[in-house]
Image 1 (cartoon, helix red, strand yellow):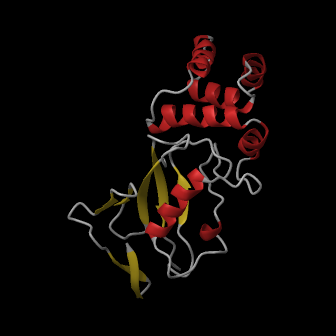
Image 2 (cartoon, one colour; image 1 turned 30 degrees about the horizontal axis):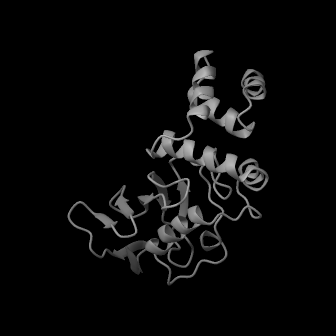
Length: 204
């Protein structure tokens, strides 16, 4: 989808290769954009987890909002699918990526954005985090980060089954009556220590 013109405050877009269902799919790069409304102000993106990363096999949904000042200002993008990544909030899906902020250029396209997000999944920037807890785990315990990210990819993005050990711990706390999403967040943020995760859950 490429911006063409703006008339009377209404955006006009050039949509390349989008059929009647208004869907753009690039199979090679596994990125997709769908219309949410007919005004092109809200779109839904999807990217595939890159190979050889903890996100491989997962499909990640994105909320894309096009501002009135597009393409001179970037689209507002966040992850709808929960993800464990230093540069993406595990709570809100907010993204720390330079091209969505001060490094945006009017010549960039939504394809550029989606491919850049795929690249971000493959190469995190833990020293410029959106989620400090995840970034700390990434730097202090890379293997735990990898297994945690894989588990989130399995639970939320449909990736293959991950660590049986982590799954058992989740099941144990869920059996105590805690909600599954809260359990996953607590265990992930407490280095998969059941005791401290339980304390966190009880304090909430």
